[in-house]
Length: 378
Image 1 (cartoon, one colour):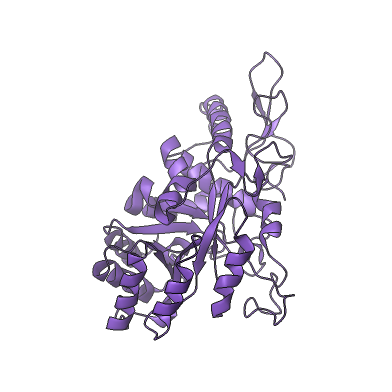
Image 2: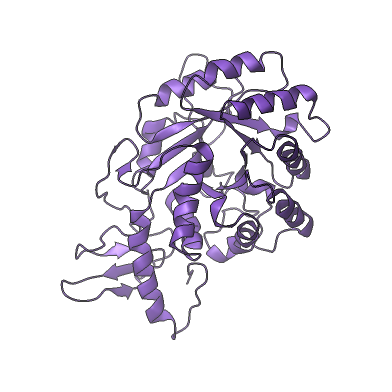
């Protein structure tokens, strides 16, 4: 049986486990959840899109309406979009798509620092409240490539109250070195290391050199790390949904960044690509991440799922509303669905049942496993 982080499957602990999962279920519905990493695009628009490719599993319309179909049932209360297109006007296209959408807090855009036109483009988009910052494609820059022009533009980014995200590829130490250089030379600029900071996820303790690099960059107080695309980073396919597989990596990131500089992101819809992870795992992945941080305490979970993102991006989290609409009970909403109602609700392990006036009891249903029950399916 797959248990949340920190629990053992023994007869001594089963009663305690049921009670803790009950508390966990109620808690998970009470906190805000900001998904800090999704992409939107529309291949049907005039001219199509530069990404994803025609043969990709995710070559389809993925707009806020499509995200809401998975985000709302999972209890997401806020969203940050990361622009993946290199086209300048796609920065504006995404802004226009979310301009009046509650809960869609903003966009991490795509501009290239060090170019002649960067300053004017940043000036233009910085007038938009939902333009939160830019993502730096690390293939474009290394420590040696941090020219005076690049650093000038990154200082301008910081002066305008925007943030910098690093798109870090798996195992790319040059990316981490470049991020370290920026943190050293532009100390006022908030920096987000994307997608687990280039970690290789294979169920084992991370590489010692990578661990040392992470511990070093984490000493800079404005550097954060995004727990995004967790299942995408797995070294095997389909990506495991066993919590133990991811714990060695998450323990290193927790040790480096602590409770106040780790944030959650789904990497939707890339998470739905059969070549990139485990299609249909949106809610299961979210619950794996949430369960890990709940094992560190209520404050840690609240920070990782929303509070840290709110501070980093300077946005206001909301636990009372789902994205786009007033918060209300959603059928199949996952952990905590039936809490306090006399109806069953579901956890990663099975089902809790409650009769009026009686305590909850845990039921391991036949054929039940993480990701395969009413609370964890789309």
